[in-house]
Length: 156
Image (cartoon, rainbow, N blue to C red; front, side):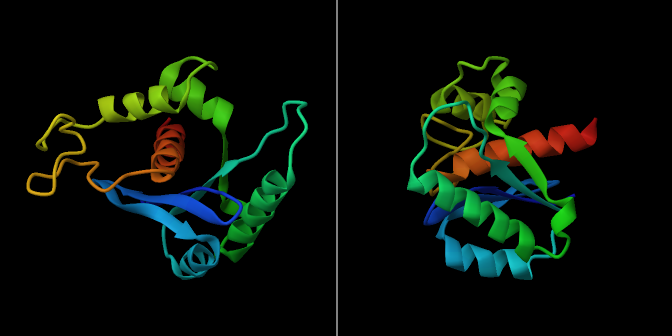
């Protein structure tokens, strides 16, 4: 199974390609470029972090992000099969707490991968001795969290 996961944003989005061997690729890309990639991809699953309302006022960037979620979903070959993952569900799955912050989620992700690389965080590693998460940075961490969550949900 191959999962293409997206952490959407109003202008750029984090993304991660997770396959049976681990993280195949990841990054943060302009939404127009990522939209073209979604159209071309032939992955098993497309997963996107979905926005949820908690009763707070939101600004224009949230609405623009929601617009991009719809555009990514519509661009994929099977829009009805897109897996939408809510942040609260990801937090509960990975950290067992709604109070989890990005640092807690990142640590939970690090704990799931072997420490085979070099440096102080061997799951990430170094250029000369990369670990299984080498290259994952920025918003790609959130996309990886989406991918892991969807992968685990499909496995059960």
